[in-house]
Image (cartoon, rainbow, N blue to C red; front, side, top):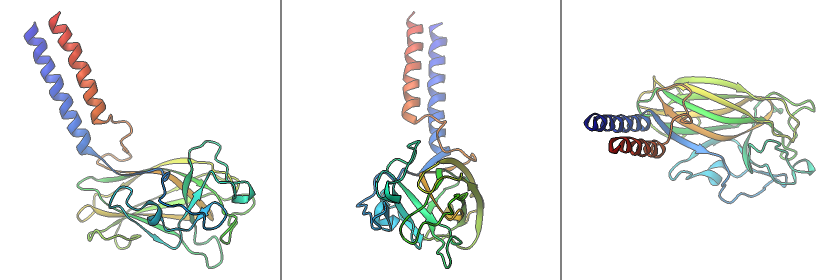
Length: 265
């Protein structure tokens, strides 16, 4: 009997380590950013808004990573006290202290269409999966407010471009995949977050190099936060449901203990 249990123990351990290896190979977290640690944030507008470049505040997070942007993509101080005279309100607290804000090009006469680009290599994975929170919001400085009194529905577009050279940019050339997501209408100074999940098909990329473009199509002005980007062969998989290797190893050790106890008994 002990020999049988010992064999079962070996098989269980072997299977679990194979599972851990599979987890590592099948889901790769490329970027995970809650924007809570800007490097030298300055309220350049006096209204809880900074027009410092996203790279100057969040470049090298992680080391070597860079954004590309067109026009101004603002960083909003959610917990300040200047916007609209009282500061912004975030009833759910999802946004923490900071979020990024964008202007839709159609919002004002001659308005600038803000774009943000992120370059990645997905390897041989078929999907670039994206999870984030979006919200309508407004500025009372920098030519704002942009939203009508009744508010506006924010619609973001996420476009995945083939990028064989691996160069930074906001995207051009072959479009691999594109999806639109919408949030909710809220008061100009109140964040009402909507969690969204996208699965962008990267299977036709030349060599795994891609650019993700983030664009606010309509809704005048809006924000996003808590951006998690994952390369995977499973659409929509952002790694939440899969245990970390360390956790799986702990389960393995626990299981070993149980089986060893049974063998001794």
